[in-house]
Length: 107
Image 1 (cartoon, rainbow, N blue to C red):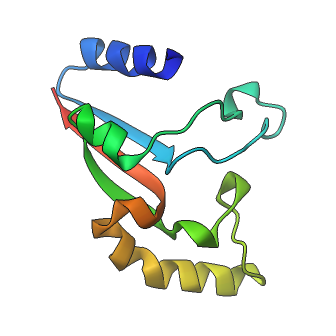
Image 2 (image 1 turned 120 degrees about the vertical axis):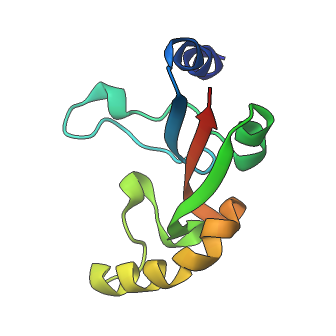
Image 3 (image 1 turned 90 degrees about the vertical axis):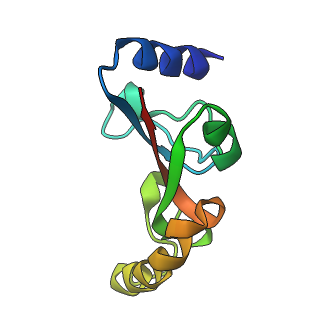
């Protein structure tokens, strides 16, 4: 509920557009380098953002290839990145399968 209120606030103060970058769905994540603001408390999915009027693009490759902090699940990381990059053109147009979402709404 707090995240909906936050997005509503962004839409009220935005001059031209709101741009959101979020994991696809809930991805557990704790504080990063002691930064409590990095803790994930909820998740957004494509249909929820589209229902709010956002255009959604998939990014960071296929969801199954990354974990907490968007780290590559396949090791070594160079191989994980290569495989993730190869899946990027597919998830761009099929954001439901992407690790992360780029959502844009013109105000």
